[in-house]
Length: 175
Image 1 (cartoon, one colour):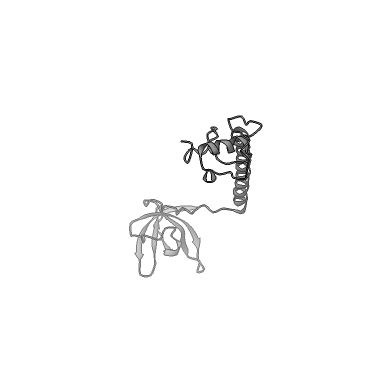
Image 2: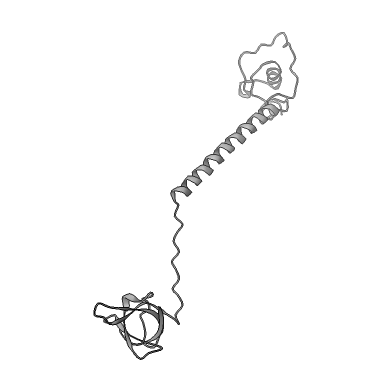
């Protein structure tokens, strides 16, 4: 059962004092270790509530002492700790995200290759009589715009039309 009372004497050096319960004139011993809030220190005249116990000598003592007129101390917030189950959930979500991202990337690459791999110009079946594909495939290996256009038309695997508009080597030869 809880009681209410007032601190009537307090010895801060020794860490104890006495409480007078509101419905009686008895003085009840109170030790600082039985206060729920130890700072700031108890003051004479403060109202408290408490529970009564009998000590080893059979005398009454106040325990679980709480101030009535002081605001409750703020509870320290603890950072959220990850439990093993929350770590597993996080791992599962991460793996699922990676799988979905990989699938989306592969789908995008397939779509991009299907829509942009074929040049927009049609290749003729036969090259001019004096022309041969000799393995060159980059703009830096060409000597003119006409030569780059022939390579783009007649040689497979050339890499001279980055924007796939049918005009090779736009920044070097065919401006």
